[in-house]
Length: 400
Image (cartoon, rainbow, N blue to C red; front, side, top):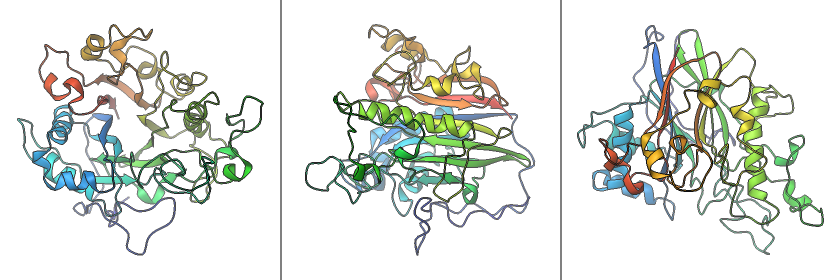
């Protein structure tokens, strides 16, 4: 199959194409399919905290990117680890794709701070429910305003969004997103209730309340001529900042459950394009994201992340076995925080394993890690004291 490479790398999956679809970048045209690729490919997920207090703040910083120390450290981490496919969390969505463009052109594609340049021909920004205002007073305070009346918490549209950078083509025309899927339409949904048993959300709210706080998207990656790997990307809401009803904890649980049901090919799932069902049993996949759920610690509802970690289609070496991504820095930094989980598995400075790269069982895992050097190790300055982000880059090497 020959590729007609993408003229549009960013478009609105949930709401159709705009009159002038935004473009991230146009990779060089390929007349022939990929015929050779390394046996081992590195896949990674990284919450980069590239958001501001107002819309456009991050883009303004990127205008003078080399003067932004945090952004340079983020780029240095990426260039040090050198993933072939990288999912980003908490990176501003902008209609013209300029955030990814500028980050790539001004920081990744140049030699800087002693690290060689790295280039990703395929960049894709993922539209988000964050800051997307609803027409309903969701929080019930008598007015409709941001951030609490958005489909996903956000002070402006696209705050805390996600993206993917890839050395391999992304089949955007076959992408499936669940940005508009309603929470109430999930069977056995963990909808929050008041102490008297009544629904926390009114019927009017539930008629518009979307399950995904950002988006759930399946982006097929063309790794080899006949090899597709589905990148399943999401960033569920953190299970905190609520009350006894545990509305965020239960939403987090069900956002994770959506992928559980997607792997089970459940027929109730209807994507934004109107297609029903989930992923067929023969498909290879990798689940990426800051899933805001730790298997042992934190405030998760009903052991949310174990839905995926224990799923029979998920590679158990990486989820529960001897290839759980780990670091010496996590073991050092979070040793005394009182959690019961192994701190070497932590992916955040606040002592939780919440960032994941979970491949399917048919993909052979070779190695894995969390980029968190201990204080005595080289390049610790890149991440010390949240210098780049309050999360760490997680990676897994797979033989494909």
